[in-house]
Image (cartoon, rainbow, N blue to C red; front, side, top):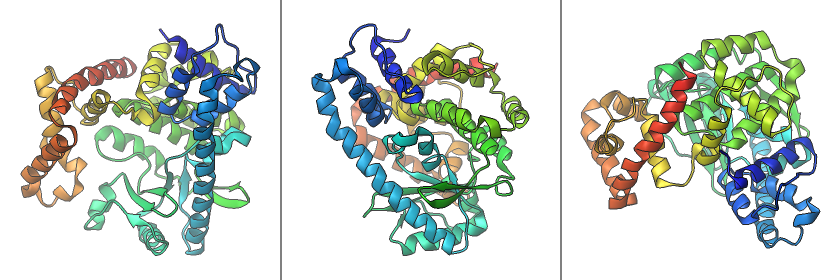
Length: 403
C-alpha cells in the first residue's frame, strides 16, 4: 500500500505531466516528499509543481529545496550546451552517433526540459565508427574510463564511459543498445539490429541530432527499463519517460512492431502494468491498460530510486545479487559469498579482459573482496546478507511477469 508521502510525490509529478494543479487530501510533509524526489532525481520537477500550490507557499521545506532545484536546472543547462557542442564536432568528423534517451526524453517535458536532469548522455555507434568517436572525444579533453585491449573485448562491452572534468559531462558510448552480458540481454539486443537504417533527425535547441525512429526508441526505452527492473530495479522517472514518449509519438508508432517486441521479450503483463500506472497515477489515457501487479511494481520502483540505484548498502548488494543473473541464494551466508566470489562464467562477463587471461581469475576475485572490505568494512558483510532478501523479493515479482 502506498504511503502518504508516496501519494503526494506522485500527485506532484502528475501535475507536471498534466499541467493541472495538484490536490491533496491533507497537506504533505514536504521535507519527506522532497527526500523521495531526490532519491528519484526529480527534485527540480517536484519543487516546480509545489511552488505553484498557493497553500504551500509558506512551507519551510519549499524554501530549503529551492537552491538545490535551481542549481540542478543550471547544471543541466550547462551540460546540455556542452553536449550539443561536442555532438556537432562528432558530426563534423563524419560520424552520426544515435542519441539514446537523455536529451530526447528531456524534450518531452516541454518548458520543464531542464528540470528533468540527466547524469550522462548516451550515444549508440557502430564498432567501425567507435574509433572516430573515441578520437574526437579524447581530442576534446575527455578521459576514457573504460579500457579494452582489442576489438573482441570492445564488442563485449555494454558501454564505454568518457568524462570531461571541466564541464562534468559524462558520455556513455554504446556498441549495442541493450548489452550482451547474458542470453536475456542478447535476445533483447537483437531487436535493434537495424536501428541505423531507420534513424531519424530531430532538432533540439536549433541543433540537429540523429536518434532512433519513434518506434525503435519506444521499444528501446521500454526494454531498457525492463532490463533495469530485472537487475537493479527501476525508478519512477524511467517510467515517466516511457509514458511521455508514448504520449508524444503515439501517431508515429508502429504498434504491430511494438506488440511483436513485447511478445518476443515476454513482457506483456509488465507493459500493461506500466500503462495502468500511467492512467491511475499520472492522469494519462492509455488504451490496453490491464492491472496485473501495478501497485506492487510501483512500490518496488518507489523503493529503488533513480535507475534502481538507491543509496542503501542493503539495496546495493541486493542489486549485485540480481545482476549475477542467478537464482536467489538460499542462505544469507551463500549470498554474502557470491557478492565477493561470483561464479567464473559471471566474472568473464563482468570483466571482459579475463576472456583471454583466465589465469588472472583468482587475482580479480581477491581484488573484489579486498575492495569490498576496504569500502564497507565488516558492516558490509551484514548488509550483503540482508541484501539477499531484497534481491529475492524483486526476483519474486519478476517471476510473476515471466510466468
